[in-house]
Length: 328
Image (cartoon, rainbow, N blue to C red; front, side, top):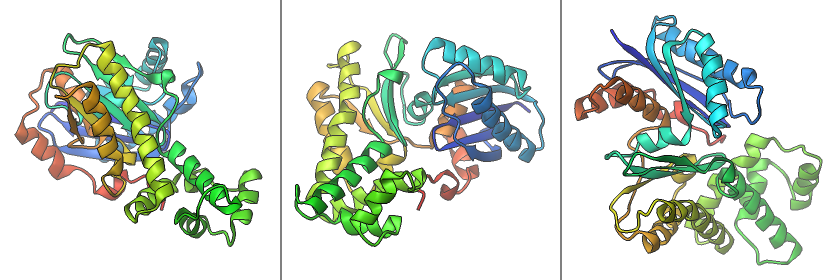
């Protein structure tokens, strides 16, 4: 039996799956975040290795995987990949270890053809492209805006602006106070200034913005429109950079931000992208990004990824709650 490992390592969580060559998930595990910037990668890679070992143990395996594809946040510069591959290679998880930026897991989970691009928006954001000629490019550290953190920050600012009179009242005020359990905006602000609000709970303001926008709140709508335009800029830049304007290709919207209720964010991105590439197809991934890592492993081994294999993956995946990052 050939066993492959797929790992998705991000800011909030690290997920590992072990599967056989037929697409059956044999083991899964979830650990804390493993995003890391800097040269000393042993600490975050220890998280990745431990999570992977748990998935292998659940599958009744040791380090017997033929190949592990690790799509990891923080793997941006070429040396980031090398450092992580060295550490993970020493961990004895697989006979061959491949490290890619985490955005490629989301991209592979959505593509139905060999080329296309992804906008990955989770806690933070990134974007990547595989050009028709096979070139790959990732925004990485060039990314400056987008994701749940910026949405939460803008929601918090909208509540402050409504409270001090710079802007009209917003539904976000009651939603934020209820979520963070403060009696008043001032009490919430005091706690924020003193760094007494849990970061995960703060970021979980993000889905409240989608709820408020769907209810017609102007401040929430403005946040999502601004977010959509900001995220679309990554795609339009890659369209120009790789000359894709006149081609038909997929733009995959991957990550927890795109699970927010209502159409406004995706509609905004779609409109902006179609101005730059009218034939682009905006799509959502068929699977979670970690499954994209598995698919990349199958690709590397030359195993056919057909509808039957995808159906077995879908049938043996953990429940949706296993992947949830809402923090609510």
